[in-house]
Image (tube, rainbow, N blue to C red):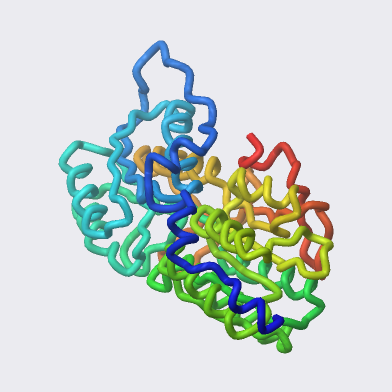
Amino acid sequence: MKPDRLFRILPLALLLAACSGGGNESQVQQKNDAPPQAAASEHAPKGPLIGIDQPRMDTDFWTMYANYVPVKGAEHDVPLFQTSSNNDAQKMIANVQQMLQSDVKAVVIAPQDTAATKTALDAAKAKNIPVVSVDTRPDAGDVFMVVRADNRAYGTSACVVLGEKLKGQGRVVEFQGALNSINGRDRSEAFAECMKTKYPKIEVVEIPTEWKKEPAIAGLQTALSKGKVNGIYMQAGGVYLEPTLAFLSQNKLLKPAGDPEHIVIVSNDGIKSELEAIRRGDIDATVSQPADDYAHWALFYARAAAEGKTFQTGATDHGSQIVQPREGLLEDQIVAPVVTADGATYGDLKTVKADNPDLWGNK
């Protein structure tokens, strides 16, 4: 980076004040296109009562997940007892206790602090109520089924796209999610291992963010003050995309793909705004974390558990694999495609085009 460029980086507070993305729940809801709501049923749901906790509403991804929950509940013909924990582990535990007192037959949670979930799981086990964990895998405790994509593959895929596009050279900033979450750990560890093994000449600047935009942008600003940044890996587009693009744009660093000064950006989530950004050339790729399938299969397994059904490892009839990450725990690793503008192959990594109508972010 040229020395005079360093003095033109806009103040962080000014950028964040101008950026509307992030923690305001009503803002997130207004800017998302909700999926079609379930048609009014002519009869009350006949299935078992399912308790489901909404973990947070401060990102586009989780807002869309919340929109899909009643739709999928209607499809599975189950009544829902819904709570919201707002990214608070203690609130989630209290919500599970409330569900257990309300005669639910199964519970669905999406713990954001996977180390703090065992209390809730033990309470459910004491009442013989099965629990399905969606998006994250609790560090300990009994779970009937985990519904999540392979988050290590997220980190590895981001590494490959960045490494191939940068031809194994340059400096990359990584916005790490919360490392007390299995998802943040999996993505960060896999990204680091891949970079070290496949692209050792790329310098990685790790920025811990706790899934918050403010430390991400502050870290990016600091990284830019110390030299040129060639790439960015953001582990959650619903958190980081809008403020990052605003920051780069305001500092005249947002160049389209193909421009020699373009900063290669790879994201995770698959939200509509990411797909639009790929088509514009603002970013290069994302991993489409399937909000619709998460809601669908979480409620599918919750009903199945309540009805006494069992599953085993191996291929499923919906294109995924059920694996056993630890003794007694099953995880359905839902398919999460890598999305690019042209659907090209990077190394041995196949991608799909951003205008693919099957992507939930395009529905």
